[in-house]
Image: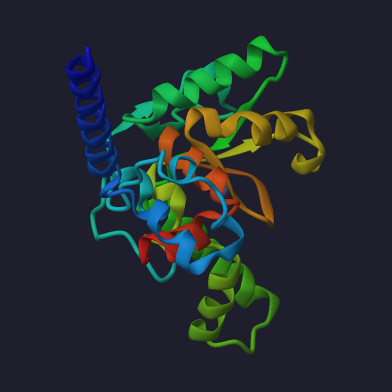
Length: 240
Ligand SMILES: [Zn+2]
């Protein structure tokens, strides 16, 4: 009988070790889980398991950072699919084909709860963005004829994205619209802030509450839990 108890004890110890080994393997490339303890003292008291549940691949297409410091490659062309007309204010509104399913789920689920989300802008090509930028440059020059083209371009860059630096060119950003209202004050905005993460979307800009960005469901959950914005999250955990 003693032998049997000893055997069971050894067996359970072995199982415990195997369990530990497995837990380590699955968390080996979970970058954000490793860093907060050293850089963020407020989260250091969280149990290890809680910090290590998300796997974030910072080099995936979902996590691409596109801004003036991170322009897209020339000729960048994501796979695109067209958003059905019920959900957009404009025909031929396109979104990344790999993520459009999540976008539509989100819009459908919102609709079931009485929230009608209409997309104003989604994908923009480099040429679309160039037209928008040039229009802004012209507007700036018209407003002050003493400006040189270079000066007008610099001013325009503070108001609209230069071609290849807009998230809309990635095909992963949407701007929602509700006519005649401040979007941040709408039911639609409140619904999105509560639910968008579940579909892989995150709010992106303080000064543009209608703009939401797809990053993937697991990445969105990790970003939400961090309490950081996308840029800060990438800087802190992704070395971007
Ligand atoms: Zn936008």
